[in-house]
Length: 63
Image (tube, rainbow, N blue to C red; front, side):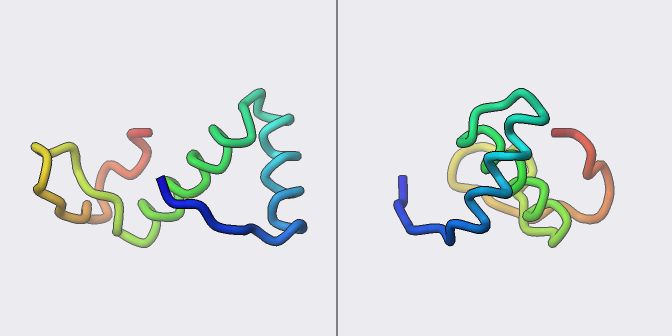
């Protein structure tokens, strides 16, 4: 997994959201990242390994 630094302000937002939604900070970050990728049409559909194709604007609420 890649490591990177996150601004303290963004980290605080994620921590507060995690507490509200009863998730771990890591789980909340993953949830927010996946939602952002879906909104941008960059989240791949469930496909065999090695095949990555962005979803189109349908069925975005499947997570």
